[in-house]
Amino acid sequence: MPRILMLNQVAGPLFRELAEDLAVEFGGADLLSGHLDDIARQPQAALRMIPGPDYDRRSLWRRAWSWCAFFLRALREVFRSDRDTLLLIVSNPPFLAAVGWIAAMFRGQRYCVLVYDLYPGVLVKLGQLRDQGLLARGWRLFNRQVWGRAQIVFTIGAYMAENLRREGGQDCDVRVVPVWADVEFVRPLPKEQNPFVQSLGWADRTIVLYSGNLGDTHNLDSLLDVANRLRGRDDLGFLIIGSGSKWAALCAYVEEHQLQNVKLLPFQPESMLPQTLPAGDVAVVSMEPAIAGYMVPSKSYYYLAAGSALLAIVPPGNEVADLVEQTECGVRVDPDDPDALFTAIVAMVENPALLAHYQRQARTLAERDFSRHNTTLFTDAIRPLLEHPVR
Image (cartoon, rainbow, N blue to C red; front, side, top):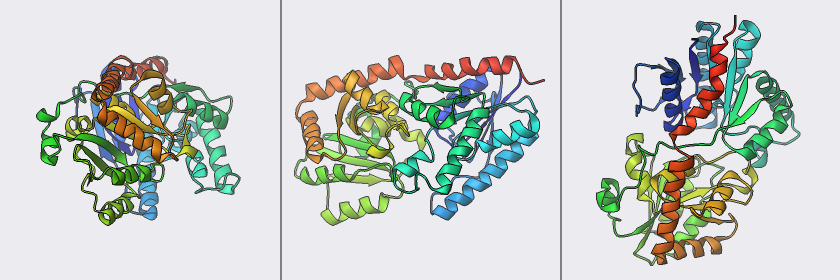
């Protein structure tokens, strides 16, 4: 059976789990990545890890350079592979799928694409790119060509799939695979048994957690405003773990207002996830209204696995909003309504029974609908391509 070659510059736990499961299912696979999550949860022998240039976030130019370096390394690896090797290419960097298009044109090689974030739509919606500008129009044409030639275009939400089909055209075979989390690796952990929480000195507080990127698509201003309003409560703490373009502004706000109820920490090692994620009694998902339908915050599903109540600071009409409003695993508030955010947090802190209900619902959902079993949706879709290779 042909091998699978996966290309993803930043392969975090979610993709690493998929890579492991595909490798085990099909007797071997290769993963080229600049960020090789070292938490193996399946036998190592089946998955060959190929190191590549890492993603450099320190500036726009460094970011672009690291993207180009990884693109060239991926192109080299693809042309060294057998012609019948199936490529699974992640939209990271956003133009990486062009490697598959080139391989298809010159070698007849087949490829699938996994789209996590929908570009240029995200940049257009954030006002960083003109909708009808030359770059945006050229990018959409590029997407149409690359996605249209792919065997399958996977994405992680129904709203994203709708936008993707609109941009990809009728030739684009789009399939939705919901995000998951390894519910055995991340699970509820009582504070008294959690060394990370003990190290914070917050074992007696209700903790509101945000863990993840702190970039332009994540607005935490209202959360800090609420933390400021609740600074007098010693039964409540706000914990923010991550990095990104908004890190400096968050640190400046906390220092300016001398918020003792807020702790800011950089990203912790991935081996710490079983401790850091369950630290949150309430876990925050934030999304700028403009980009709803163009990305899905995968952290939401790790929060579910940890048994945290979701506090979704998102507009209506997207995957996270639907999840919260239809399943009672937390609360949704509009991003521009700080009073509603204040009320939601206070209600959960002062009503332990309500908070416990949200938390039970979250864990139940993770085990039932968003576990690692979802990787079988990939294996089932890819199997026919491997059983009938290019001749």
